[in-house]
Length: 114
Length: 113
Image (cartoon, rainbow over all chains, first blue to last red; front, top):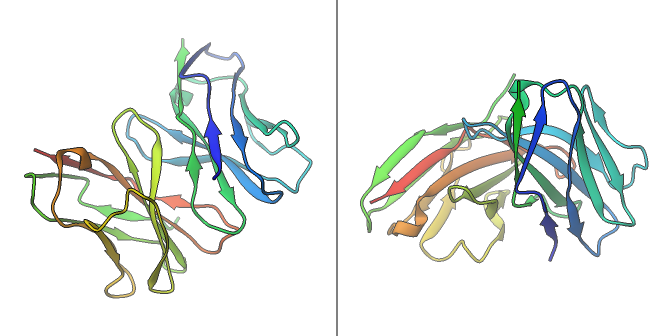
């Protein structure tokens, strides 16, 4: 079974600075998808970024980018120019290409200080 | 932009009562899911549903739980006899195909008293 581990229960960053959230996963599959979801206090799950395992190039979405290390099974999220609105719980998630279900990590609470 | 809609947003029920949580997935989506998040904990998969039948379920999804898509638009999760430990946020999600991203509803907060 796949597992996803987020080893940082909490992180903090100053506004306009950069922060990196860590995620590792365990799988025996070679083809899969990785995601970062943001959960603000409203508890809505919002997709931040996705990465297909077959793609070597790291995904980017505006201020959000990932560092995908397939051999190390690592998938970190970098948030540049942090904004107050980035404060939320962030979940890393894995999805096999064969099944649609998501396996989530434990989450990292990000605090942004003005 | 199309969205997944869940009702109610918050439901309080007495232990032992039946509850039905409702979801309207995005109209051209084919795969449907329920997830649960106990307060402060990670999001856990409950069940997936495709082509009018369950395609996968977790060990959490025991005989007290059932899902159905009664009218081609609604997707419901029923808990037959609620327990205190069923108190959680329940999320519905849908995807168009297996290679596309999941869209989540805003969640239903279930409180069992």
